[in-house]
Image 1: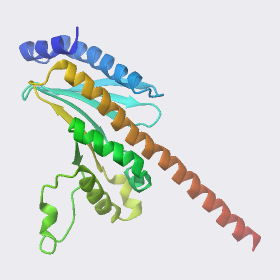
Image 2 (image 1 turned 180 degrees about the horizontal axis):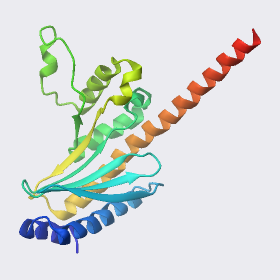
Image 3 (image 1 turned 120 degrees about the vertical axis):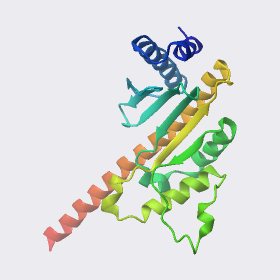
Length: 219
């Protein structure tokens, strides 16, 4: 059974044991293929959750601990692929070469950023921040700077936001598969770069601590 078949079956039968098992099987196969085409050196585990009208296949990276969600809303008949941005504090350490590629991909694939952490600003002094900004990079940086104003000890509790691509029922299956493959590559790449930056940050922090302790002991 392919993606078109399972979506048609869900639309006809609704969400039941049969469609749950098939969506998990087909979805996992699609995401595994996307990871392989992107030459991602990682392993993943797939789990499925659902509501009365939504299926959510969670594809977890063993290496980076990031999640990639393939969801289907049987009410709106939309297929959704999304990820939450992990280790978001390291956004400042991502090189411009990636952001150039990221902007090009977002323009071509029409994926978007969604925020989970609300903006805090003086609505009278800067009412412009309430506008619906079109630039995905501007919005990511705006929410990043806003979240970084929170005390460092409290940032671990912040769910920053993520990236999302939505396909309607009018989109052809070949187009969905092609775009999903590329979205997976870009989404994973961002989380991987942030993951690497976090490892370096922790190593540097530990090194500074050891040097500080050594100086104290030498006194």
